[in-house]
Each structure stands twice: as structure tokens, then as C-alpha cells.
Length: 303
Ligand SMILES: [Fe+2]
Ligand SMILES: [Fe+2]
Image (tube, rainbow, N blue to C red; front, side, top):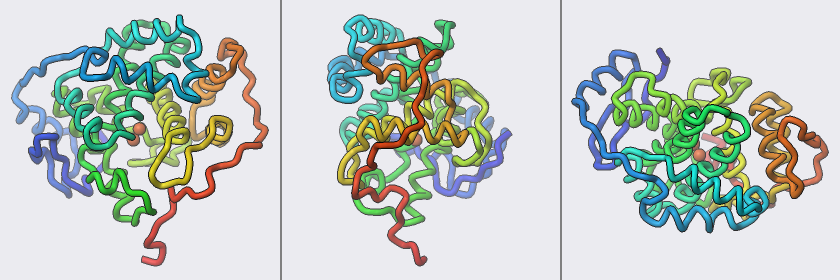
């Protein structure tokens, strides 16, 4: 079982306290939480048919760099068709509504990561059910952000160390929330939420473990890529596609992210599509990161 203690409470969207700060996440605690949930069975909804998602996804992937990744009409049709098979339980759908209304970046990020995961898993996973499982992780990986105050999620200036730690709480919070909603100890979606900021070389959080899970590998690459190429309040501009790919390639070289998944991402970014297995990834560095970028900078350095 995992060795983690909650630094902050985990609350559901309807403000029910699931676990207080200071809780040590043992198998027993998670089991107690699950039995407390008392066999509730949640309605499942088609993700694509919910709210404005069926319109939003095509519009999000129509702008650079996604317009190159999804340049082919056949690819888009296949993507939407596959997405139509993804059904999610009501609390997850409600979290998407929450982000759409309160934090449009996270809403867009979740759907972009979803689209990219569906596309990458198509070339890397042959089993339909494994792929569906991978796809469903996209909309759920950041669900723990419902436990992070919006003023931190949307802060334009550098975070304090305390705010950074509250932000990082989202991975463990997601693990607790999804274990609770799926009423399952070691639920696979909960594990992805918990581990999507871990890295292959152990340089991630919350535990700093060496990631060893191909489902999480795809999510982590898609997650980092979308975070880099998206407009964020804390920097002057997004990374351009070339620089983002270079940053990710370097992370692959340092054994932080999975190189096979990076190859798939790079092959999709080329105008002439080659199979990812034969795609050669350039190690040349010519891109320039955006000038003002406060990510990783703290405003209480001396504290
Ligand atoms: Fe995250
Ligand atoms: Fe994310």
C-alpha cells in the first residue's frame, strides 16, 4: 500500500469532507472510506454528448499545434467515434462542469489530454478495452483540482511554496476521490490520478517513485505537452510547438518521460505521418521558451 499522508483535506464537489488533513492513507483507511460510501451506484453518461463537449473538442483540436496532429478528417472522425464510447460516472461529469464554469484552462486541458491520449493509444495499444480505459483517464487525471482553491489554480504571479504544495495536493486528492467514487481499493483510474506527476526516474511527486506503468506513461507525456503549449496566466506566451517538443524530448533523454510515447507524439506532429516506431526524434535544440514564465519560480524564496 502507498505511504502517503494528506497535507490538506479532501472534499467532494458538494463539499463533503471525505478525509481530513493529516490522514495516513493506509489500505484500511481507504477501505473504511469505500464502505462509508455504501454501495452508491452512479449514473454513467456519454462524455461526448455531455454539455458542449461534442462542439468543444473539434474546436480545441482545430488550433495549432493540434491542427497538425489532427489534420486528417479520417483521424478526427475516428477520434470522435471512439470518444463516443467513453462513458463516465456523474461525479466526474460534474467536475468537468465545474471546470468549464470556473477554470476554462483546466477544462480545455482535460479535453486536450483526452483527445491526445485517444490518438496516441490508437497506435500504441491494440486491445480495445485497454484503449478505452486509457481514454477515460484523460477526463479524470486532474479531478483532484476540485480540492485546490481557484485563486491558486488561476494565479498569474509566482506561487508561494505553500501554494505549490496545495496545488500538488491534486494528485493525492484525485486518488482519494476516485477510490471513493469507484468504491474500489487500488482502482486503476485512482492510481493514474495519483501517479500522473510521477516520472520514470523518480523525479516526480507525490511519492517520487520510479514510474512503471504504460497507461500512466501516455497520460504523463500528453499532460506535459498540453501544459507547455497552452496559454497560462503565469507566463507571457505559451511554448511554441517546436520548443515544447524539444523540452519533452530532453525529458525523454533524461529518462523522465517514456521515449516511445514521445516518438508517437513527435510522429503525429509531422506533416508527413510516419509510423511512430520508425520515427527519428531530433535532439537538436533551436526553440526558445517564452520570455516571462513564472512556473517553478516562488515568490517566497527567502522563507
Ligand atoms: Fe495534474
Ligand atoms: Fe493535467
